[in-house]
Length: 212
Image 1 (cartoon, rainbow, N blue to C red):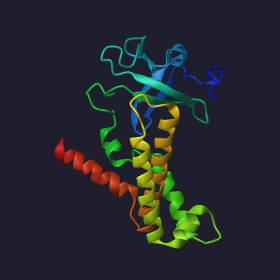
Image 2: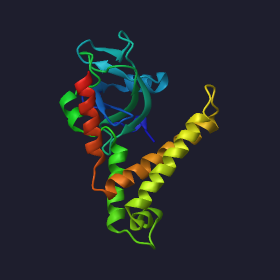
Image 3: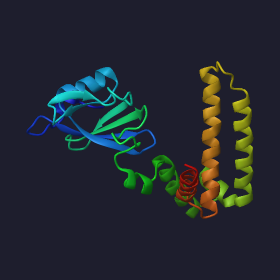
């Protein structure tokens, strides 16, 4: 849990804040003083201290492209902040999503799927009928994993068809749960066949670039 009073501000009373979208993409870096930290937490929108104007500024206050705060975390030394936010439009003043375009294009935008892939690779290497569900499924082979992907895809379709326009939280949770199962088993199938999720994401990026 963030303890604001224990943060270590520099000699100018500032602390750097790295803005990260829920996808894992780094959007920008700015500086906050104590007032900016408190205003960000109370308003729910990322607010910085402008070193050039010597004033507070809420990101997107003129463009409308605000950063809705999801969570604020401090690093191990308490001298830097991670601002996990939901961007409401482009973040960079150039109209791009991020201020780190070249880095963003080469980096994964799905860090959790990346970690899941590594976990599945380790489970596959230790596949055993006596192991966990994942190890047992790997031991049963490609055909069995592929069958699970088909089964989970069917469950996603059924859950989606049952989701009405004014869906209840339970209906939404059902679709989300089935979609999570499908993604899990699909990534298992990719790992089983020696394909990385990065290759899939790279192809999607290339297709989008060709059409945009």
